Image (cartoon, rainbow, N blue to C red; front, top):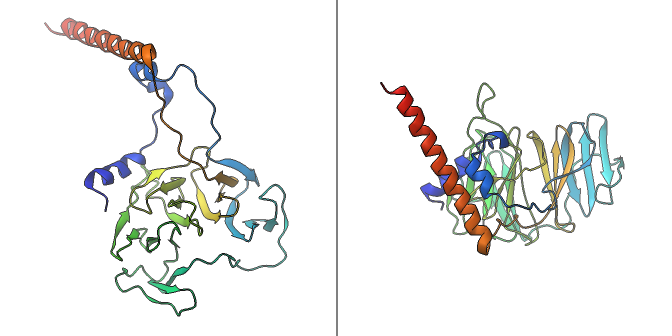
Length: 287
């Protein structure tokens, strides 16, 4: 279970990033002198500027729905054509353990067995339908209740609160959780949460801790789908279809030798100047 510190970190992860123009000078000095371009976390794939309401994957076939209809791609989204066969897809790579929601109750079954209710699972509400179980963590499940409450099952079978979204601010209210996704092959322990307002959040420990992972992605994500064979995650958004290829988080910059000392010296000088300016201003205002 996450500690109180971890819960606080989850809330902080949702705070909007400060514009570069208001970053303190000390922080600017601490940035690396040379920036190295990295592979974009999210990349636009198709239907730019269009609302894509759903995305599914089956044996390498990608199907996305727009206002103009459903389209399919067999080359990873490089080209699309109208999807003739309608209806939901059935992923060919079924996990060894099945997890699903029926009328608000979580059911589970091993391959070849009849599903049965998970005995310790909370009742999620009749309209609940979002559930994800990363193959890399057998027994771990993340699901969302009708009230937008995110639950997590650990490998011992215990259920507890995983996440509660905070309001976005102003009059916009709390974003809705629209989708959950995880890889059905043991490629990663990550669980991805799509939201209609916070982009995509990721948990790399099966739903225990969450951070935002949406650089380059619109805030309004309507659906998610994973493709284990392509090591890809697809996001249907109000601005088109996007793709993320499985990769590690960028490593923090590492400073060596004189470079490190110079940066700390710059931070100290800026701090001294700021203190002197504050004292001078205070002296002028005092009688």
